[in-house]
Length: 264
Image (cartoon, rainbow, N blue to C red):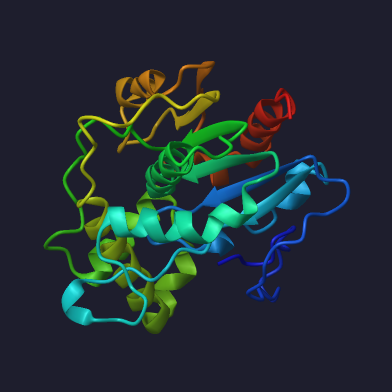
C-alpha cells in the first residue's frame, strides 16, 4: 500500500519497496499524498526533503484501475470501490496525527477516504489540502481524452505539465502512461456526490490552485468552502494544473506554512 513511507529520494534510480511505514522519530505529522490521474507514488519523489523531518511524507499507492471487462486481479472500476479499498488499507495507520494532500484526482480520492474514515467514528485528519481540483459537489468537466489517439493524449498531458517530454521517445512507457490516464479518468467519471450523509469535514480545508489552470476555474476551487466546518483557505499560485512542479519553492513554502500552523 505504501511506497517508502519516509522520504522517497528524488533520484531516478531510487527504489520504492512496498512496506508498512515506520514513523521517523522527529516527525510530528504524517502527510498522506494521493496522486493525480495517470500518476503514481513517484509523483511525490523528493517531497520529504522540501518539507523537512517534522513531516513524514507517505505517498499512497492506489490499487490498479481498469474496466470491469478487463478482469485485472485486484483492480477497481469505480471511484466508490477505489475509495473503499484505499480506506481499508490506510485505516490502521491513521491513529496518530496526519494530514491529507491530494492533487487533481487525488483530491477526490482523499476526500472520499476522509469521509469514510470520519463516518466510522475515527480520528479526522489534522488538515485536508486539495490541489488542482474542483469541489467534489461541482459537476466534473467532460473527459478530454475521449476519441484521442495515444499520441494526442500524451501531447495533452505534456501541455498540462503532467509528464516529461522524454516520453515522446519511449513508446512503451508512453502507452503505459496514457492507458493509466484513460483508466483513471474513466474511474473519476463514475463519481457521484452523495445527496445525503456527507458532512463538512471537521478539520481545516486548504485549497491550492494554479492561476493558469485550464481545468479548474477559481469559482469551482472556492466551492470547497462548504466542505469544512473549520477554517478554509484558498490560495492561487503561479502556474497551471501542475503548479506544484512549475514553482516548487512557492508551492512547498505554502504547503509547509499550512502544515506548520496545525495543532497536532
